[in-house]
Length: 161
Image (cartoon, rainbow, N blue to C red):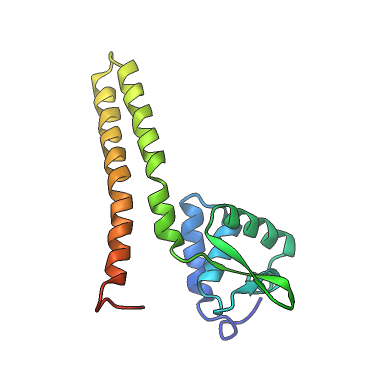
């Protein structure tokens, strides 16, 4: 495994990956994704990711497949280079947040159905309806928040970090 001077931000990337894993993302994809947050502008090859993370090519391969399928990372091909490089997809986080709106709407419908089928338990029924209301709120607001964030980033005078 490389030293901190070879790979700045390794500790922060590992901590961020641990947070994502605690939230439910598989551990190796979380580690690969956070390594790519701090990648060189050209991205990393699978071998470079393996070296950075101190893991096998097979572990990186599975994580890359998962992250590509989730549209978090992209494969970059270069003319004359047989090895693909990987980097984050621009706007992946905001896009993923907004794309979950239909899931929240579907979950809200299921919560309403649970409430409709549980009329003998008024506290549980009220709780299920409250969850449904919150999920509908998320379904409406998450895409709006992502759009608001994008508009703020594109506005004249906005900080370009």
